[in-house]
Amino acid sequence: MAKTTHRRLAALALSATLAGLPVSGLAEDLKLGLMAPATTLDPHFTNAGQNLALSAHFFDTLVTTDADGKFIPGLAESWKIIDDTTWEFRLREAQFSDGTPLTAEDVKWSINRPATIKSSTASLTIYTKAIAKMEIVDDRTLRVITEKPYPLLLPDLSNIAILSKKAADGLLTEDFRTGKGVVGTGPYELVSYDPENRVVMKANDDFWGGKPDWDNVELRFLPNDSARLSALLSGNVDAIENVPSTALASLRSNAAFSVEEKTSYRFVFLFLDSGRETTPGAMANDGSALDSNPLADVRVRQAINLAINRDAIAARLMEGLAHPTTNIVLKSMDGYVDALQPTYDPERAKELLAEAGYPEGFRLNFHATNNRLMNDAKVSQAVAQMLTRVGIRTTLDSVPFSVITTRYSQGEISSAMMSWPVPTSEASFPFRALIACADKERGWGLVNWGHYCNPELDAMMAEALTVMEPAKRADALEAAVAVIGAEMPIVPLYFQVSTWAARDGINIAARADERTSARIFSTSE
Image (cartoon, rainbow, N blue to C red; front, side):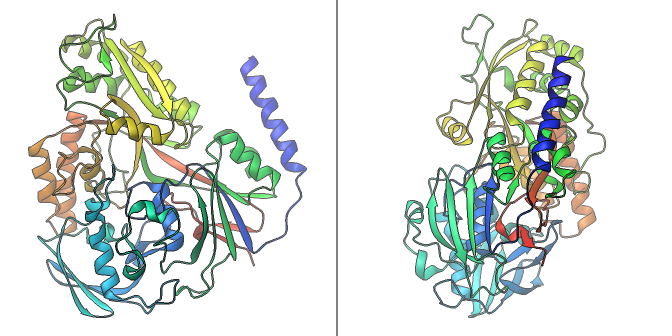
């Protein structure tokens, strides 16, 4: 009863605060509060959503997507398929922020560049490996030739920023931190970058898409939910992403603010280290080392899957801003399997643990972010408690995203709650990144933190990727996803509903890819 009363009082206090706020006049400047800091200005270094969203201010891609994920022209004003392996792109007339014209050579060089970056823990080469070669027809025409028939070239290229070869050739990723190389065709130009606090930019008056909505933009990194909301309420920022779920009702009811939400392509899941003979975070109940890795047993992974009450997480912790799933794609996407439905069965989970040789369970160190996802700290705590109830005594280490990536690179992680945006409408994207056998040459498994490897499953997915006929490809993808559901190399939890809020007078174009940039905000004039 006390908790319920506390929540009601908090909601009333927030409503009173909102009611007392003046409606601000429109400005030519935008201050935007973001949840996760961008870790680099090099758009080819790390395949992370917040970095790709930041790069969209300065750089364009050949093709891009609208708010619902439909592919539309970017720097390529048109394209056509010459044959099963050859695509031709016609570039629009555009210029970089330093005044030099965009050419096919810049595009070819940019597409090749991710493969030259060796130190990334989440390489973008997953989007370029299918390309066998490129041919420059003229300054505004480029042909991209794939090794095999490859229907996903457009989705892949929508993630590769086009840089000025003249400005960036020879630069290292760390050089971008100072602003070197940040020369693109996008709507804004870099003014300053503080990786811990903010990015400041100004309008690119020569942007091919017309005058940007904002003369000046400041992105502030505000990982703490309360701080981000307070910044909006106090007028220190004009808009925020990932609105704290407890504040949504009060914000919606106040005319001083607008709120938008959209089911995103980001799904939240558990990495399980199933591919190593031993794993550092799994121990016997007395803390001693185990002879083998329990997560390598499919029965243990299925037990973990059955131990999690996704509906409770969605309703109580996410307050409806999550869609429970055991698929790796939404129902609207190719590869979705109707038979894979979330099931909560803790008693069966205990039986599976006993069948696997762990009747008394075991101990598990579990990692999760505390600054990347909506309510990630609360959700990961709930998951840890649910696993503990079935006998997997789980110790949670909730830390910033950058800490997890460092620990992963050092081989210290046995399990983690993470997320991945599915940037197109089919299952091959999360599979290639998260589940496929690690293969740098192929560009697969580059973020496979679970070390899972099933060559037969890889072959199924590889075959699906050569099928140009959509219906047949969808069938092939479903067959592969059914295997994933049985093997459970990762444990899907839910798809996240993304939210944004802004002061009155600012329109919000909510996006399914959840990427927040100044480009999704506009004035009401």
